[in-house]
Image 1 (spheres, helix red, strand yellow):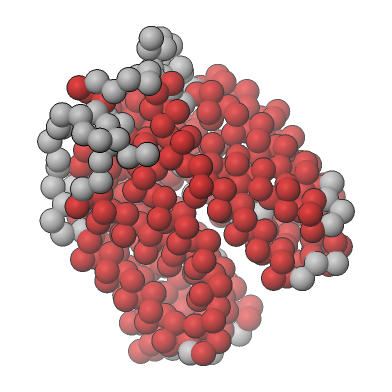
Image 2 (cartoon, one colour):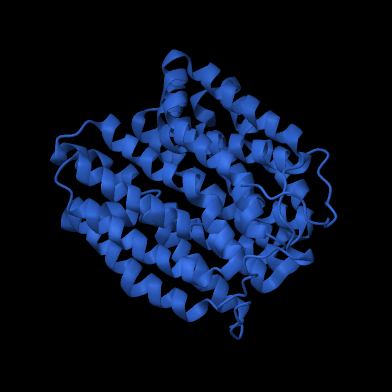
Length: 396
């Protein structure tokens, strides 16, 4: 039996609520250790390597369970999953805040990873597709735009909180924000979307891998690998090309600003372009920054950061929009999860692999990530909308 759909609130209210929830979710999970990791390691007498290995642990959880979460969203709707994500994130933050050793930190980070699997971008994107169908591109872009503030605002806010109440208190404040702000906000703005039950029908045929799905999987796996490499190492990379540590950090900060700016442009000026065209453009942003960095050295560090940020900002939107534009809304959450699963595994290993490459040669390291971007560019060709077909064997 299908769940009833509750009356739709105004689209601006849904988008604003989802966007603020995403900003808080990213700030209190994905970007948290970038500010607090060193202090946690010192207080718990843990190496920096171990602390950031726990970040990889939190990223591994979504990689393992994302398809199951997505299948539940397709069958039963996404509101309860999104509500549960706030509770899980709060629980994980509290566990980290009370951690006294590496085991406590590991358990807390694993629970945070579970919250990420339930509530980061794919879940609100799937709800928007359920609400607006083929017209979901613009609301998805808007949610990604507001959610991008998770780094632009979240990093300095987390740093300020750490100065005021310490790293443990910062975790407790973010946990309180999840329960007292994000949970009621989601309950208010998110309508109950229809599920489609456990039985596939003609409109929701089982999903099978085909060539376009494989191309998208390769594209986003490369994109997320490069993104995590740059998020972890961009200041060090720019310093290797001659910038002072302060100048390198300042230039790297432009990455987040560029990501938010290009999402705003896609929401306004670029929204009439086909999503495949903007995706193709996005894949060339990082190589353009690389060329400037190799030719002009450190002074082009800002160009490198803005190129990476702009490309990644557009690709985040593309990950939500391309499966919709190519396959339509049927089985959107599950198909997107299958396409995105290799990307989730790739981002786990990106920082460690790039660190090794950077120690050997900064130029070769950045040429390697640019080569992956050219692979992404190649994967954008031959993608055409697939007709809805009769049911075929389901992917386990």
